Amino acid sequence: MANTVILGAQWGDESKGGTTDFLAENADVVARYQGGDNAGHTIVVGTEKFVFHLLPSGILYPHTTNVIGNGVVINLETLFDEIEKLETHGVEVGDRLKVSSRAHLILPYHKVMESWDDLGSSLKLGTTARGIGPTYSDKMNRHAGIRVADLLEFDLFQKKLDFNLGAKGYILDQIGGEIDRAAMLEEYHGYAQRLAPYVVDTSEFMNDALKAGKRILYEGAQGTMLDIDFGTYPYVTSSNTTVGAVCTGLGVGLQAIDRVLGVSKAYVTRVGTGPFPTEMPPDLDEEIREIGQEYGATTQRARRCGWLDLVALRYAARVNGFTDLVLTKFDVLDHLDEIQVCVAYRRRGEVLTTFPTSLHALEECEPVYETLPGWKAPTVDARKYEDLPANAQRYNAYISEFLDVPVTILSVGPERTQTIVCDESILTA
Ligand code: GDP
Ligand code: IMO
Ligand code: MG
Picture 1 (cartoon, helix red, strand yellow):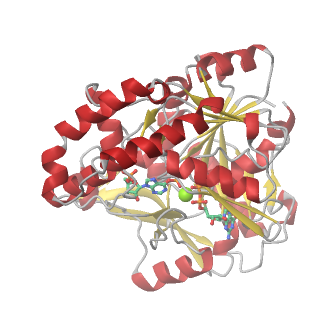
Picture 2 (cartoon, rainbow, N blue to C red):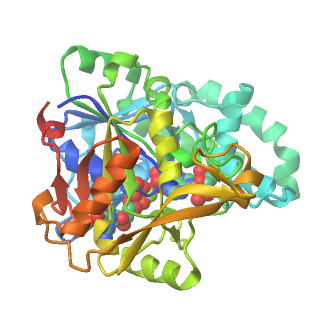
């Protein structure tokens, strides 16, 4: 199997977790390279459902090693909670987890800082409230960031913590987010002991794995339209979610990547605030949300639903250089008479075929839709491309031709086996 990136082509929740789990059967290493526990990746195996926020989605297979790279921001409470839940469930994590010594830590005051930012700003970003923005800000700011390696040198951790509590003290006081220093030190001392066995230089680990010819999956979090540079800024997350983050978030070179899979739903969803040109009218939005069970895996918030936006998707294909597409949640559209796809935007009488930079421009864009016939038949039992109704095949072909990217995997239900592989080379080559 080629070394493959699995990343979100839309605004997140495209089923990167499900896709990673499906492909991990044939992989040796599964690595997360950015984001934190803002991610919520769902895997359904039989009647069991798992949601991972930090653990890579290969963890359910005992033959895989799972890596949390330097580009990820780690909330240790979440991490140990996930490990504990899995182990109680009979899935041994043990030395199958490797955590980067260079990854930055999300600390309790980061969540407080996030609510302070929210209070003081007219932008209501609608974040996941996991402290992601403040942690990446501290990392870039350099004075304040605390890394896994610092935690393992506990004196250094204590010094850096004191610096932060001093520097952020005014804000913590203002909104009553006071941190109990002694309790926090005790808690983090415990975490340091528990974390130490997992910590390695993950760049070294990944490069050794590459040299040994291991099969590697790189699992993205969030989606292209939430990228700090290429997304709908400022309504984005605080990391690069696009393909470049694989190299910077794991310490691997370009030759470490053979294929880039862009994962997209057969429609679009978005959680939180921000422009969304193809958002459906309320009735249809609600209908799709109920059928697709579009509620956030991290925050349980209702996801906004829209028609597939091929302008945005073509932009994502360009920014990431998709070699393959994964189209998920086909079954959610089974009942529709007609399906709309956005093929351009119209703004002030002008037709746009590329995704604009300016949010004001984007807000003024009206989608130009092409209407395709629905297939009006259940797809949930399809396991081969030929099992799909003719109009479902046509829908798939339309998307692939528009983007000039082949569709390699399709999913027709949340369960692991409800997957159609259109190009077997993704399993073997
Ligand atoms: P991720 O963040 O990209 O990993 O995606 P999420 O797990 O947040 O959201 C995807 C949701 O869709 C999960 O609840 C999945 O179980 C579900 N899902 C994935 N593929 C399909 C599919 O083909 N059909 C249906 N109905 N649900 C799916
Ligand atoms: P997965 O990996 C969907 C969204 C939030 C908010 C914005 C910024 O499951 O696809 P943040 O907490 O990151 O500062 O929030 O980004 N967001 C996601 N939306 N899926 C995600 O992850 C998301 N992670 C963040 O809703 O709009
Ligand atoms: Mg998700």
